[in-house]
Amino acid sequence: MAKDPSKTEKATPRRRQKAKEEGQVAKSQDIPISASLIVMFFLFLAYIPFAYSYLLNLYRYIFSNPDYLIPTVNSSLIMLGVKTIAVLLLPVFLTFLIVGIVSNIAQFGLIFSIKALKPKLDRINPISGIMRLLSLKTIFELFRNVLKLIVATAISYFILSYLFNDIIRFVNLPISHQIYIMVKYTLILILAFSLLSVPIAVIDFIYRKFEYEENIKMTKQEVKEERKMYEGNPQIKAAIRKKQRELSMLRMMAEVAKADVVITNPNHYAVALKYEKGKMQAPKVIAKGVDNIALKIKEKAKENKVPVFQDPPLARSLYKSCEIGDYIPENLYTAVAKILARIYKEKGLKL
Image (tube, rainbow, N blue to C red; front, side, top):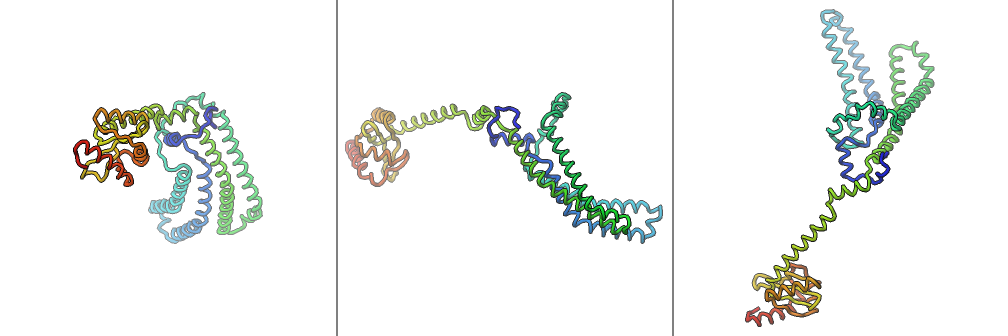
């Protein structure tokens, strides 16, 4: 559970990543146990016949070879014993190791956290240790483990009670039959425990997931501060956008001085056009604006002796159909060409 009642917000992706780096993950210890029990059942089901056959052949080989009974060659017998243990147990240990690794990775992915290995002073503090022992979480864990032990004991009792008649006849059977019955009972117990462990593991994982989500919750202020840190302070971003607009305005006003004509509304729209014969396929819009910006464009044009021509319909059409840097559309060629021809004529130039 979240220790701080003010932590009401779900963790952000950055908070989750930080928790993962610190080794905090939703982890259930019952899932590896359940997976190991299930794998153990199927492994023993397939592996016991092999182990039985291997040991039987080994015993036959040893007792049919008199050299192994001579004290001077006991070292060979020891090496054979070591080899036998390796052949029989190493695959089992490796299988359980792989199952443990895979079952943990399946819960929270592959992580490597050095922070989780660092010693924490509060863990060696006796007062903190006593507080942890008396915490609700520890009491809950103790209750859960005791409950699992009671259930496991009850299942074992009922299974063994059911098989009690076979156990009574156990001592009167040949050794091969005794081994068979022992293996059968062992597999039945493993199967029962593995079937029981599945719902326990699922419930425990759901609880661990819920507990993890509660523990990494954030306060509204923490979410706000993180957003400022990783997405940028809104005030700073607004200031940057304002500065960008100012620089863009300065560049646009500088282009007005290069215009051939400024077409106006006359009060609300202003569009500056430039045309270079042989270099441009059509006149290009190099500046435009409405209201105050339009007024500034006209003032800048007058300062640089750029002709200002009033044509309200054309000014509105140019403003709405073109962005800065666009060539004018074909349907406006004739209207713009007449204005440019008139200006060029006044200057004594040819269009």
